[in-house]
Image 1 (tube, helix red, strand yellow):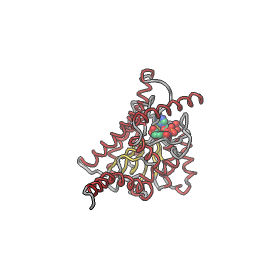
Image 2 (cartoon, helix red, strand yellow):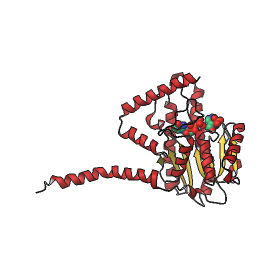
Image 3 (cartoon, helix red, strand yellow):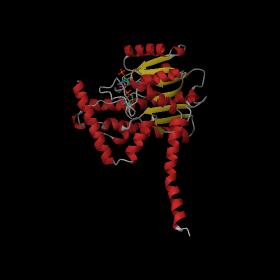
Image 4 (spheres, protein in one colour):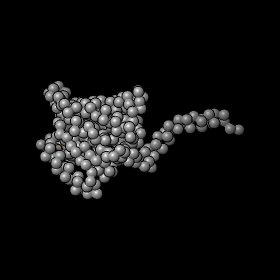
Length: 318
Ligand SMILES: NC(=O)c1ccc[n+]([C@@H]2O[C@H](COP(=O)([O-])OP(=O)(O)OC[C@H]3O[C@@H](n4cnc5c(N)ncnc54)[C@H](OP(=O)(O)O)[C@@H]3O)[C@@H](O)[C@H]2O)c1
């Protein structure tokens, strides 16, 4: 005779296993089976994608991929000479899109006091359907908070959080207009730092946490309150990426993709419908592993060791 506890245990195991199986299924679907839906954003007579921090690293790789996918571009940078070179390089490296329009604007994202309305005035008639708030980053220097100047702290917050906030504010009416003919998506570049907050990167980590809440709150605004307006938001949870522009670029490997590989992953997940997504599969696994398998104490010790070695490397580079 079957022990009456057996079916109860079987049902209990099924109930406990279901969320994990769902998670594995979602992972396989998102990273290996789901076709890219980036072309949903190619609507209207001339669709544009806007990328901030587009003169190097990940932003430049985004620009190239967006051009390949048929978008016209609005690029942002801080150095006009470098921007002109990048525009030229994009035109020659993606010759099949010779007819695409590439515009740009220049602004130091680390400074306060921009006239954002004036900044976007030349863009007001463009049909912008995708926005990548990519500009950002941090140095790896050993100073603690009380050794940082106020100017440094304000600059870090402006570059990583407030520039995206105020630029988004003035773009929103234009984006809602574009959304009348199809979906519009705004993406904020986050970082695993927002989840693990390593030592010496507390301000940077906090700015990325700001973007994470901003993406969710603004998405709720456009979706559930007087909406839906058709404008959606996503927070991109990003792990390490090899970018040559950084003071101490991390070695490229399976965990740390090149900017080009990472940009392709972002294009593949663009429009996946998630408000928070790690576009690169290995980053997604890393984030799941650090928050579900390793305890906080292990993660904190490990990230402290990693920052320590980055600081040592940047001292050697100087
Ligand atoms: N790389 C990673 O491992 C990693 C990991 C997690 C998250 N992220 C995030 O990904 C984004 C891009 O990072 P990245 O590694 O590609 O950075 P990057 O290689 O340093 O490139 C940053 C881009 O932003 C521009 N920029 C920097 N400061 C600026 C300022 N004050 N005003 C205007 N433009 C400015 C740079 O211009 P110039 O060409 O003039 O320098 C460049 O075009 C950032 O938001 C970063 O936080 C990166």
